[in-house]
Image 1: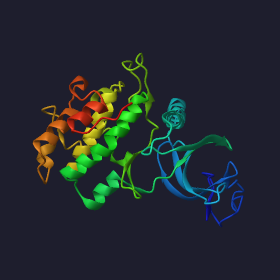
Image 2: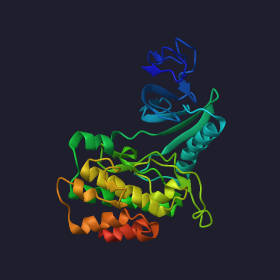
Image 3: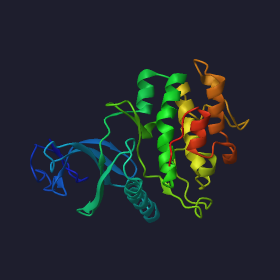
Image 4: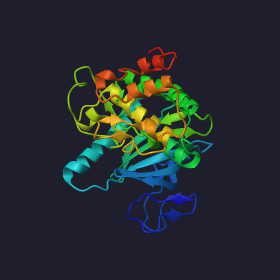
Length: 296
């Protein structure tokens, strides 16, 4: 099957191996090689499709991200363009890491922007939570052991992800490793720009307080990972896990199974409201978990 990428096509489904859509006449191949076969999802900035690379003998699967903003207003559209482009730039800057999707291509065709990246086969952690229920301590420790080194890697490359949450972590089917995806909100920082305010970006339930005010730090990603952990442990919205009247986390009240004091203290420090009281680096967090920090 081929799927037409023209957003206005009334009948996008086409037989396999055609080069042009039977309904609207649009090209079915991107860059004469990438063929969309089915839609995967749609968000505020664009649509994603499962595709095959017909330029290679094995025809490996990949993901097409098409820029197709739903928002209105010139400034909103400009910001959407910036974020879409930013994902391609960040993925290229980061280079290859086994737990970050590879960037395959970034280009414009028929006046639309496209980003091609490696397809990760697996369910995200929000889907996993819905399917299997709350995580236990061993699962959270394993998640941190597998994912904190990825944070360390991106931070060493001066990138703050800014949108860590269960939906942006996919557990790859082949090796069960968590893969960090969606770098559209990520930010490259220098020592000069780290303390300069910018745009507030991120998912409200998981975002660090300072990030809401437009100032993301490396410790902001650590906070969001901490929120992800207590969400997975409690199977509750992070909004329920924080007492706004007392300005403190109450996530322990929502656990079905208690966790060790050691892990509890680690999570508490990840979730500190004041950034300076959190772990400042992923290496510090690894040390607190009694795991060996990776060398730069």
